[in-house]
Length: 132
Image (tube, rainbow, N blue to C red; front, side, top):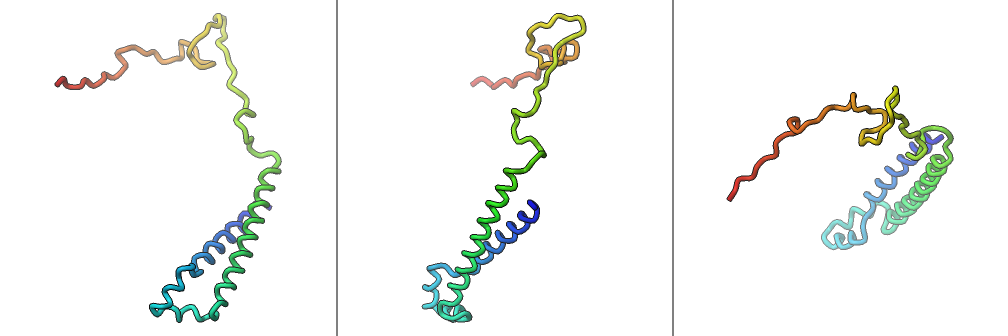
């Protein structure tokens, strides 16, 4: 159901975009003085504007309805992927194996034997700026 509504939603979006692009703007009447006014007489003097305006209004209304439908379907979806990070279980682990638990900066489950050894010789040298 959701995929059908999504396909209709995209088709309506393309239709609204197409209708808006083929309509004349309010400043298009100024071009009639320079000879381009004859091209708008196909539908009559006001016929094209009212027809295209009505179609744009109808498609925009249907687009709005499909938007609400998609919202309703997404909000009432059962199962699926969890939508909250807090719903996921955390990583739990402790150092075991006869060792006493001590506070450490290492993540849970990482022991000092498995952590990579770091020394100052492993660090790259910082570039030295020339003195002026």
